[in-house]
Amino acid sequence: MDTPHAPTPITAELIGAPTDIGAGARGASMGPEALRVAGLQPALESHGLRVLDVGNLSGPGNPWLPPLNGYRHLPEVVAWNAAVCDAVYAALGRGHLPILLGGDHCLGVGSIAAVARHCREQGRPLRVLWLDAHADFNTSALTPSGNVHGMPVACLCGLGPAELVGIGGHTPALRPDQVRQIGIRSVDEGEKRLVHEHGLEVFDMRFIDEEGMRRTMARALEGMPANTHLHVSFDVDFLDPEIAPGVGTTVPGGPTYREAQLCMEMIADSGRLGSLDIVELNPALDVRNKTAELAVDLVESLFGKSTLMRAGR
Ligand SMILES: [Mn+2]
Image 1: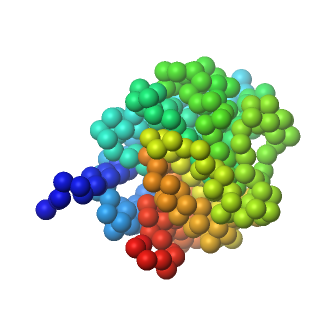
Image 2: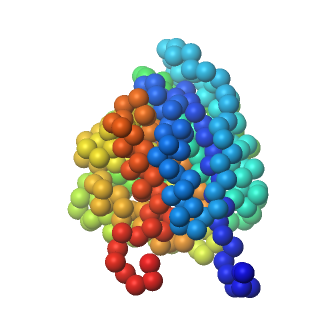
């Protein structure tokens, strides 16, 4: 029986968004099922969470067309993001911790716009950790590909097509000073300039090499008031491709297994995690689902599984 002081168990709500509508390679649409097959739900349950798998959202198919006015599949991208935004916002309203199972990273727009809306309404500070090989701060003027999965941070900060930028009902959804980017190692020239102009705080691989993951995460997590909602947007290409081959946009030189574990454990230690995206997992490029299994392993650490031999853990 619960004592009056027992903490209410967290209810995680798994929301699948099976689409690769914003990506440059097909296959991330199979990500949600690969995460389920890798045992995401029982893994979370083993750490004391209640887990509600609400299944997959539905949306338009991928017509695989060239860019139109600088964007590929913009109407479809908007439709998927609107569905994600509604689902994540509803989950937060139920007091649940939404876990978006992508899908490509364009879905970060809908997911984080919903979180930002919830936080505005609740008067809570929001911080977003963007774990990624890429800054995802492109605009249609900067990127020739037109793939929207390279643009979500820019869209959230108000740079992008109006129908996507305004999806959470407030433009911009985020201020750049709410975002910390970690693991970045591939940024286009024009994008780099834009990131600096907008003052995003970036802990790139050079920073992690020089300072170590511990100092990196301490910096990324510092200065959060007690009621801060922390959102983690975990692009699986954050990880070194040696350990995580199942993504469409591998970039060598990412965090090792141990560095990634420490990153997740320090986020867990902050006690602030309120929502999560797991995106860009591409089972078509994976090897026997090992990248999905690694993602599940790391998400366990995010929810308190510690690989350290310390008392009380
Ligand atoms: Mn990304």
